[in-house]
Figure 1 (cartoon, rainbow, N blue to C red):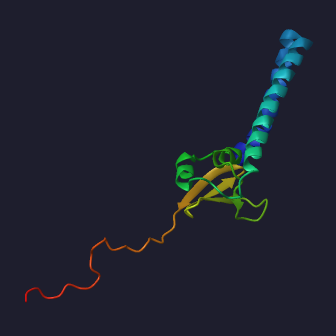
Figure 2: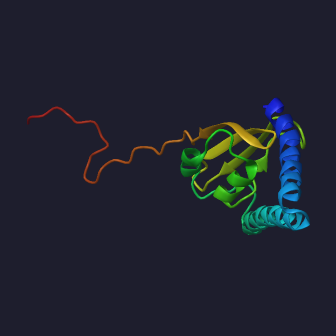
Figure 3: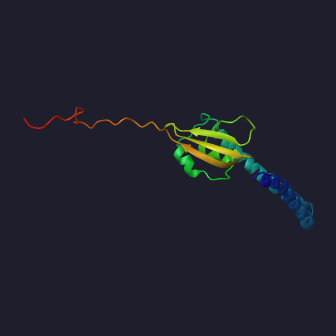
Length: 154
């Protein structure tokens, strides 16, 4: 995972430089302006999405999700933290010290079910669904007697 992260840190800027260089070679300065404009538009789209996700998350309690079971069903390995925050519309409850890898976050719902996510480098590696084990006591049916049945007959 670390190699992939390092590789992306090198390949993305290299690809941007190649695209700008090719635009200059084929179209001159207008090509550079067009490719730089496209790059700025791409960055602004991602920034706008991030701000919308965080804006929605500010109105919810930390670590709250509507349904932990539904969150568990929607998670996939490699999903970034920002996508999880968009799914839950809430920031996760941080369980590990700040800036320590792997990071662990928890989201709970009203029934006390929770999903604990483990992220490395901001990407989801594993998650667990925990459900409450307390089961309600059996309630006797209406008209049922709670006393043991006696011998039949007269």
